[in-house]
Image 1 (cartoon, rainbow over the protein chains, first blue to last red):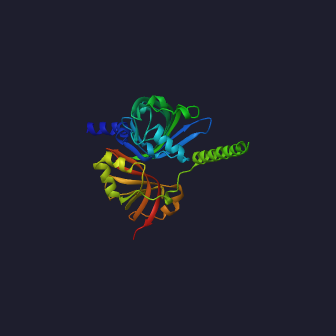
Image 2: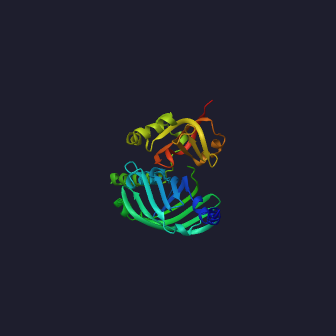
Image 3: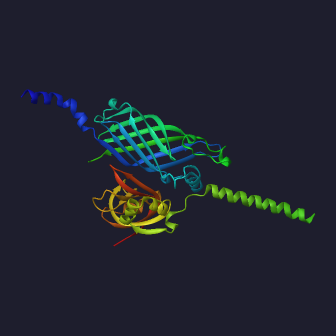
Length: 184
Length: 146
């Protein structure tokens, strides 16, 4: 009988942990933006996969480089052939952890500040990345949003001499993913 | 003297034509998917199988190419925007991200229909939790099969 009382009392304490499962999307949006004197460079990819384990804070994002769409065909061709060499390196993958995972109540609606640290593999190079952003919980959906900068030179992505004055080494990456529960 | 008179204007014409060509190349939008002839035409199942069994060979064969894929619609996300082709209950599929100009015709489609969709292959996404998907972008509906 004492055991049943204990379980009933502890139930609400452990309930959120039991609820915290994995969340995912296959339609995550990743955009890139770079300002240049000639013209701003923008592209979006809306087929990124993202899996978040709310219990551990593990997060993984994967994106196919050829899925970045530019308004101008020439820009898209240069991006794939001369910069990221997407035939040779078709995917970019981020694997990391939500650093303040304990502060995020995945079972309670709200907007939480989040910071993520992990490794980003792009163009065959792996570098440590840390970014901050927002995690919004709304019902069973989790909206993950973050912006961070990366340097092309960190990933051995060279800028051809002819474009050096027009393409910045600094690129802004925006991650915008709405995740739903992953059923086992 | 006469030669100088000819060279000047000819050079100007060449420079202007060159500049126009360069600008047209620079501002060229992506070609309409409806106008592009597919490099390959196959079923969703066989495309997925090729990537699963011979990943590198399939990448060289299909990456960046326009392909037509036939199969059954198993899922539709954001009505008309994403059409998933495959077998019922199979973890692997072909995910077709529709061209924004194609949203209206795509919205007429329903789950369970057999369709043929043309798009640019951007690769194979594989994940132990989420399964494996061949991804097609800028997709258009080819025709509705009976």
